Image (cartoon, protein in one colour):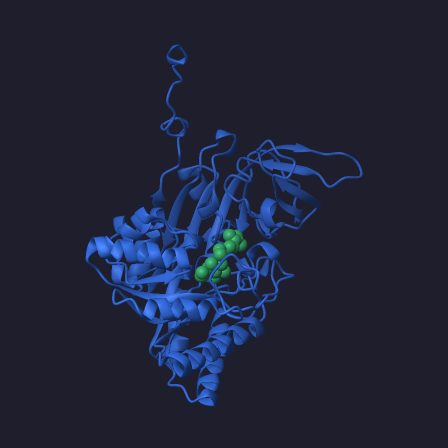
Length: 438
Ligand SMILES: Cc1ncc(COP(=O)(O)O)c(C=O)c1O
Ligand SMILES: N[C@@H](CCCC[NH3+])C(=O)O
């Protein structure tokens, strides 16, 4: 049995989530269903805070909300007193609707629009993380129009290639994000921003990628950020108050994954920033981190109901469920791997190795390969583990399938926090085509 859920089995032998029977959840809310164990989210946030409180202050933990962004999630984050970062007007509007304190929001993005920047400035977003020269100009225009000022961080690409899937690396020289260092772009950006009375530059930001298992990339990025801060102090008399080292701490999806505990990454970052600052004669700045996956990933479960299957001698059977790539694109997009358990009896001995596939019209719509499970029959409920990050947030309506409902579970109580999309919802934006007008 999957060891991770050993203490989540109730008297009936069923999988429980946050103290609630997963079969009850499936029955009450239907499947496919996304379930979050809220206690686990809080625990992870608090463990990040504890590391900082022990080793370095001031600090900020900013939840990278692209990993899972709904009104309830922003409310949960707010209740833990941490920051969050948004990457679009849509995420910002969701945070506003949740009543999230705007001063604790950082706004990211490599192509923020005029409308998005205007909304950010009008709403009083705390920090804008400026990515490129076009944005410096656009932000200046918005600030003039709004007669406002903004606190910013400058995002640099630190020239670090993190050891992770190529599609989720972000810090290499040839990255679409941030100002390049070697060519002098970053210096040029700082000069422009320092000369602008509407901009207050707080410091620097770098993010090297996602689902990273090794501290070396973070240590390298931290050293690089301090080197840049030192250079900017010497060349431009700029005092860097904030170093934001991004997120990207990897989590365990399968028994093959061996990441460090998320807090260990933070310890290594703090240690490197401190020693590099000491070596460079710099005051130690505020350290900010932006974890997404490590906060919500392990707390999420996708529940599915088994339907058809296809068995062919010599091939691994296909077992189809009622969801698929529309509620979790990660296996199709990155060949990401997950573990699946039988919700009514996770301890039952496996009798076959199967592929769990979705109901979408794509051969690539495979949710999990080589799953060792008991013989599966229609109507059984499966739980896919660790689906909390970039699952629901990357969901689509492909094949005009409705997106699933989302439920939060805490202290043995479940609450619906996102309604299941209906077939009616799917056509709510469609307009008829009046061919007589053409
Ligand atoms: C700028 C930035 N910060 C933070 C994150 C969060 O990364 P993760 O969810 O891997 O912690 C991302 C996503 O990779 C990002 O692009
Ligand atoms: N969406 C990706 C990670 C990209 C994070 C955003 N910079 C994933 O599912 O792993």
